[in-house]
Amino acid sequence: MFENLQVSIRFSTVLGVKSPFSRTMPLRFQLWKLPVLFVAFFLPLWGTHADDESSVRIDIIGGTANPVDFEVQNVSEGEVLGKATHQQASLAFPASKDWQKGAVTILPHNSGNIHIIFLGPWLPVSPGSRELVPEIVNFDDFTSDEVTIHNGSFEVVDEYGNPKYFIKGEIPESKPAVDESNQARVVEGDASEGRRYIRVWHNSRFATTVSVTVNVPVTFRFHYRLNP
Image (cartoon, rainbow, N blue to C red):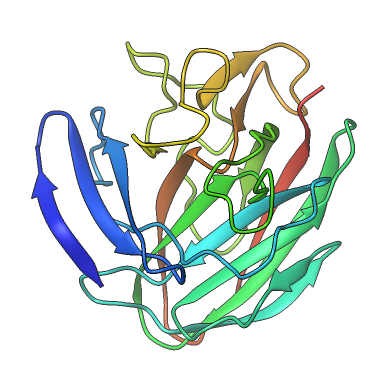
């Protein structure tokens, strides 16, 4: 699954992941002062068709070192994209430019860490193209009653402006290129809760790690919208 794995403790991890189109797409993760989140998660495999352009996306991955098997039990206001595996699921939620509430419930079949990735829809500019439409979406107020979520309101940022306890993931060869205009970042003002929220798209996203317990259902709740 992984090619050309390199790790830099101070700055980034680069993973090469083969997509269904037999390409290798490296993904760079910036690791900024993450006390419990020094992990390497991978870019979920792309589907064979575009996502809905008026949607946001959350991917759940059952870890890499000691993978957690899980099943998606319920998705409010959304749907599972493609066929979820026992260690990976991509979820899409119809969105507008107003804040909406979403939720997903999973059942872990063993204890361990899972990775939650916040991103936008995969929208090729044309069928088979590697260039994407950078559909920017927003997330806020990520919570759960069953597990501990660190900084799910995105109110606490580090000296680089990134939310603490989160990893920023970017594709270096992204088309279009990731730059200041479309880079994942924390935004102040007009949040659904507090003062801050995150903006992301498919090729520039944030992720966090959550510990789950075998056979204990977990519901994740969050607010989302298209970038106004």
